[in-house]
Image (cartoon, rainbow, N blue to C red; front, side):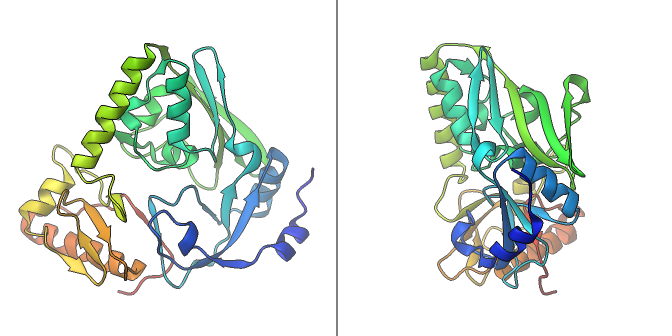
Length: 291
């Protein structure tokens, strides 16, 4: 199947992203769904200025929407397979499904990432991590497209750091391979339950709650800096700081993307004034926001 960009232009409509966003707020965008390698190749030839949208758990989109095309991987990119101790996952699949599949096969190595509501592509792109583990720890290889061509990196070529993965825009991750270790299914499931419980206690699994808003500076957590700067009761419109974790936002029923953006800047200003540390957002804000 070839990528007919003219047909895509006719079929694609500007859609409100709110219902499909994990955080339930945002504006509109033109969604381009691609279902196979040929279509993804064609998309990366046609566009070099776009937004790759996974589960939207780490993205807050302006109420005014975005002008760039939004790429969504579907079809073949949602497949997950197991080959011995390796799990091959399409970038459009969900990380939780990969962990579930791994556990069912008695494969260990991803348990500490349980509860992270990300698509595989987004998790690898951001090198998502928790409880001392990162996605990159288990990566054997990564495939991605850029300019219509497929590339593959493996081993020492996979260069990742804190919340920064091995692949950069305008490249699009298409498929990854996790190299895992055989273990007891019961042991794996117990660890998954422990991680989920700890995430709940820290406020990371909470209705209408975000993940961490800010990256942790060197040698200290952003949550500690925020709490020590007396920001724990801060709010803006329908968005407030979580009572369980200062680096998490709770989005109320009347939430707006602009409220989250305003609260983020309010906290940054206070922490910088009190601690002299300028916090860097971990969540991405797409589109144009007010000052």
